[in-house]
Length: 475
Image 1: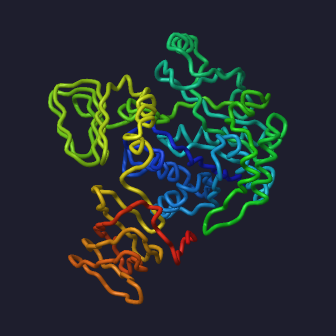
Image 2: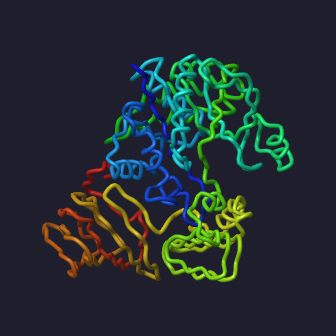
Image 3: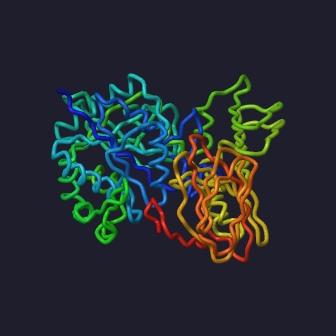
C-alpha cells in the first residue's frame, strides 16, 4: 500500500503586494485572479486525489477562519483540521504545530507536504512526478524542498544549488542562496545547477520535530505545548495562545533547512509562480494579440503588453504599454509592470497616512460565517451596505446602541426578527429596525438572499453590535 500524504496549507498571510485587490483583511489567497477559483481553492483542488492525499490541514488565523471554511465548503472538500494561530510567528512555529498535531493523530512516519495557499501551479504530470519523488525521499529521513527550473534571472526569489543525486531521485542541497542581485542571478543561470526556492516542502512528522528539537528547540517546545493545550471551537482548533506566543518568530528556512545535513531538493519543471507582483499575474494570464491581459469591465485601445483588471468601474485604457491598471471598489492602482515588485513601498506610504490607511487594511467586501457584506456608500451619519446571506444561514440576534437600520430585500426571501415579532420580507419589500431594538436576519430559502441595508445614526462602527445569541460562538 502506497503511503498517503497529509497536506498542510499555510493560509494566514496578510500580504499586500497585489494591492488594491489584496488587503490585510482580504489577502491574495482568498481572491480570484486567474481562472474561476481563488488561489486557496486552486490549492485545495490540487490536493483532492484521495489515492495520493489525506484531507488537508489548514493553518490560518482568527480573522480568516470563516473564509477558509466557506471556500472549502464551496468545493465540497473536507478538511482534516483548521488550526488557528493566536499570533503571527512566521512559518517554522506554524509547521511545527502542524507536525505536532499530526504526530498525535497519525504517528511518527506520517508524511507532510507543506505548501502555501497563494501560489499558482500547473498540476500536470511533471508536478505529480515531483510529489512522488519527494514523498519517497522524505520516507528515507530527508527534509525535502522543491526547486523550480528558472525561466529568467528573477531577483525576487531565493535559489537552491543542487548536489549529488539521491537514491529516490531527489538531490542533496549544496547551498541556499538569498534573493540575489540581477548580475548574480544571471551568473547562476549561466552556470546551471541553480533552481528557484518554491517554498514547498515534504518530510515526515517525526523527522521534522527531531530536526526542530535539534536546531530550534524553543520552536519545538512551544509547538508541542500549544497543541497539547489546544481547544476545539466549532470546526476549528485553537492553538494555546500562551504556549504558541513563546515561540521565536522565524521561518522554516532559517530555523532548520539552512542548518540541517538532511536537506534534499527535487528539481522540477512544472509551471509555478508565487504571484508576488502584478507582473507575475500578467505573465500567467491569457494574453490577446497585443499581449494584454484584461478582466472585468475594460476597453483597451492602442495598448500593448499590459494588465487591466476592474472589479467595479469600466476602465478605458488608451495608448499605453507595459502598465498595470487595477481597480477595486474603492481604489485604483496604475504603474509600470516592471515596477510592480515595489508596490509594497507604495502600500507602506498609504498605511502611514491616516486618510489612506484604511485602504490598506480593510476591503469593501467583508466575509462572515453567514455570508458577508459590501460597503457601497459612506456619509455623515449614514452608511449603505449590500448584505448577502447564504441559504439556511442567519445573523446573530443583536442590537445597536447608536444606529437604526432599514432593510430592503432585492433577491430571495428574508426572515426578519424584530423584538418578539418574526416576519417574512420578500423581494421589493422593506422593514425598519429601530435603534436599540433586538433583531435578526435569516435566509430560510434555497437561493442567496441579498438585502440593501441603510444605517443611520451617530455612530456606525462594526463594534456597535451587541450579540445576544449567535450560532457561530461570537456572543
